[in-house]
Length: 114
Length: 114
Image 1 (cartoon, rainbow over the protein chains, first blue to last red):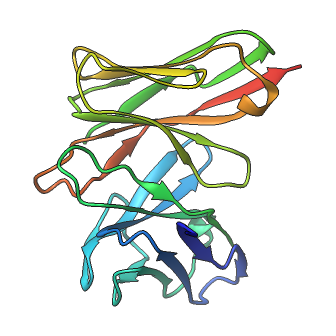
Image 2: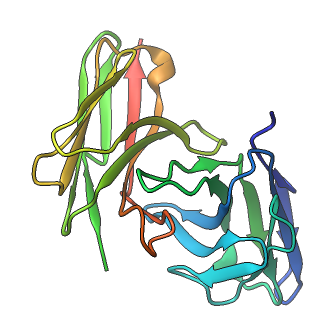
């Protein structure tokens, strides 16, 4: 059981370039999330998905798009990267439970935009 | 929106000392989660709390869900060097249309001197 995996681990982009970050989970979780982490800002939700084929905006969605074509995968796209998108990106997943949704995180992708 | 204040922002302690940190919210949560993040890694779930007043332990870690549902506390007893890292609290309103979204504190950076 690999849990939540993310690719790539590191990436450097020039301003205006595009890229896609891939998140995969093998826990059969319904919910998946993309966060960004910046110094002093904690973790902020970019987009999330409550099931295959569905996505929704989080706290800081501008400049990002997502897709969830398969239940186990959640893709985060940057169409035209900007230096403000330099950050560490984390994917997480959780199962649907009324009691509380414990989110499990991937190892992160460190993105630098120059 | 909901905000979490986590304190202290950082702690420098000697090995063997006990540690306490807390989170307070401007609104009510019905689930509290505590995570630890090691350098270069993703957050790892330490303890989950689902009921006001609940006290839960995980080895040397003990966390409590405040009676008012607006706060939570994490204690680490007899600290060791591997306790070094960033500790995050996260509040959640599970069920309904919340889709398990978490609100994170800014984190407490813990340094343990041998």
